[in-house]
Image (cartoon, rainbow, N blue to C red; front, side):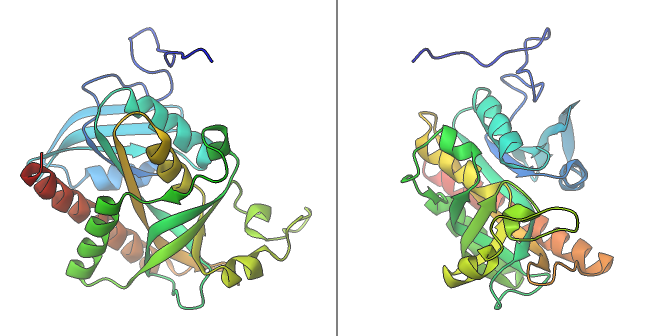
Length: 266
């Protein structure tokens, strides 16, 4: 099979993310919502790069003396794969930490809690173009450990375990919406039986691509529970904002922990 170079724009940057070597730092916090990327970047002491192209937002700067990039990728596994593939051309090694939102599946998970993914079900189509079904989407051990340590240190309620990543927000998560059918009406019950904590739309792609890439990539993630999939009712705005803030703080602290450990073990 012929190996290609991802296309570049007329500025010599990778086509979708509008970034090239030097624009992205080795630690990358990612999220789906572009406004969340801007919220994370508001913690920076200095901003060096700010790019927006299509749904992709990339902000690179310094936080507590650590070179850090934040990427907003838009919703879904396909966008995620594009972001990872193109960002990995720009910097190596690279660590991706997803900071996002999710729906709670386990009855033990409450709205406002955080879920740190140990492994993700690849219930989406994108990662299967890159790796066969038997490849497990498992978080990089050191990233997982840093996220757990950060959540524990900050005192936020969190869970560690199995995530389901799906390609769709509605029928893909077992919901029949007015005016549309659903081919998997028993999906939520099945996921609960399998011990799934939460459902979202990106995590498995990060973990799969990190596992199979010939580049040195680590990946992991933490998501804030915005609703439970059993009633699909989102919490009040103040609750969601607090959950998002906690999620961001855990992601940032995890970067700090990883940077310290990486510096001690080059």
